[in-house]
Image (cartoon, rainbow, N blue to C red):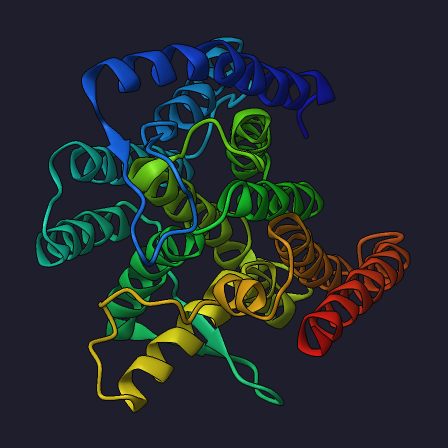
Length: 356
């Protein structure tokens, strides 16, 4: 296992780069006119620079390069080295797709084709889901289904994070919390390379909240959302799913990523099903997401975001508990209490709105 100094360097260096770079990006964005304009579907009331993802991406990448130069990744087996490169290069590629879209407005079809192609290449580099599990069954070898399921996971998570990026600080906070949980789980599974990527991403996402929490000064755009979503999905594969065959909690290890990232996954799934039932295209944006529904019920912007943070923390704490991490269930009890308290606040505010 690595010394804790490498993880601390990666985390705080990522934050420092984001804090330094984001104000510069904001000024450049305002001068060049790359802003997200308000409309009937969006929640903001004034044009906002949408290039903040450059800061998150840069902070995470700089942190990883620095700790790599310091020897944090050590001498990896060839297959593990390819997996790390797969997540890193895939993250760069997904960020590039999002940034190009932020600058030039790509069509949904062209974005999807590019994402599927990159995810397929990443799969060939070893970032792949080879097992699934069902309740009361052991691990199921996927065989040729590994490719489509891995691509669906990587592309789906990237878009799920992009879809929840509808309120100030929501996507960055959800990704930051999820990255911290993945970091702890990867450490517990003794997957130090995946843990380093997770902690660098956590620093970038949480550092960005300084400028993105309500009232936001800048948005992350598609570049930031695609980068964080893909990287979370990739870390989950190489840090948890890939070690399922050699761990004593194999079935649990396969399930952990879906639990940690349950909030954006379920939100996207419910929205897609709802749109299909209404005879609409699943790719046409609307106000059917959880955060939209809470706002419509009269919940304040900040309380809505904090409640979804609590949901993310709660499912993450359950993952810690099920993985048998020491004090994992104690943390889960605390997260449950927080969720109940914020849930009561949400219910009380919605009742007050109904009465008025």
